[in-house]
Length: 320
Image (cartoon, rainbow, N blue to C red; front, side, top):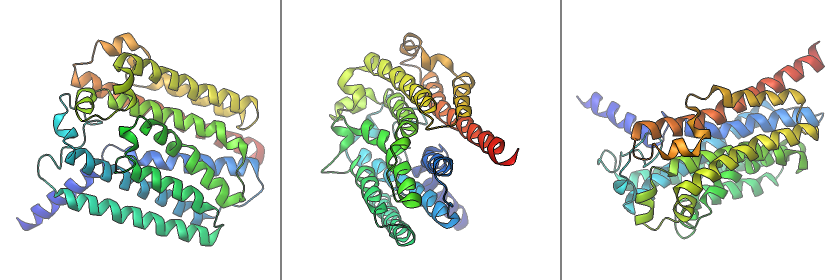
């Protein structure tokens, strides 16, 4: 019985870290894309150790951000007020059900952030101290997204923070680590990932609208209303793929990276591209779950085909 209790606790910790949802794996995407871009633009070697530390550090910061968000959404009463539950919004419910002590989750988030800082200093020792600028930006934004006094997600700039964390901060760190420069050619590809991350958080905030409004969380969905936020969701997707076209036209990415456009055709619920149809499902948890999942799919599948394009370009140039 004691073993079963321990096993249950492990499952609860994995849930509160959102491992099953795969959110934190999104942080590995800009590391992989940034490294491919470094190889494409610069005649440098990618250190496997530094690359590994970059991936782990990004994931660790993301875990810290998710867990501290879980804690503060619990103590504010936000998650308990959510009336339309989906696996991708409204928190995990672990703290509301009393399965873990809230303060332990908060302390665990601090430990993750501390580990992230240690990893950042290790990367700086192996590469350049300038990497710490990007690490500091990542730490402040991940911690300050939910935690006072910054509370970015309460001030209508949380989505912008996610835009930066999904792209520019991590890809900028990759370029700084391997080339010791901030290359302007990284901006458009960073926007591709950033805008898709922006679209994900907007869709995930829709089921939380009533609860967020009650606790005065002035995110963009609360500020502009659901209908306008869904229009902004579509604009973010258009801007993401426009960034790919511009990057290819300017030779910031190989032309085969246009394969990213295969991604939108493979999402499971294409209603995410139709604001009117989404509005028809506002009270349906199952429909909203599919819409949130499809926005995440859009990012993952588009990024995956983008990377396939990079791989094919590398094969053509170096192997054929």
